[in-house]
Length: 77
Image (cartoon, rainbow, N blue to C red):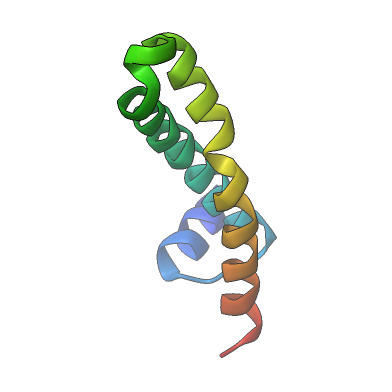
């Protein structure tokens, strides 16, 4: 656990820290998608349904971009 925290805070990207960053990005994109869905379609289809749809569709663009960005940071000095 101390190695994970040391690598995470030091900015070193390995498989474990990459997965932690991917998990953090996915959770934040789900929250942002839910908020965006509520703002855009809350009155039309209901706030809870629009939040669920936004939370499910939010990570669709973030996960590939996050993986690509982490690969770029890992292999380009």
